[in-house]
Length: 87
Image (cartoon, rainbow, N blue to C red; front, side, top):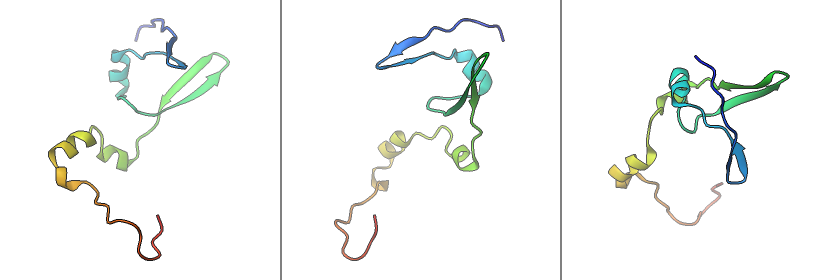
């Protein structure tokens, strides 16, 4: 892949860089995915975290869309604890 410069930009009170779409596709990274980083004497190294089997089961699952379709599947609040329940 060809090297291209990235620009550090302000996002609210933070600074960040945008990762190009082609790089994300090649690395199979998606929005909100966690990355590990390491500061080296040559720069900043970003590494994708390996997904565990449980996370793989829910890849691409949209919880909001699910609840929009299945209104009856949300939690039900039974009120205050009556015994020695621990929350």
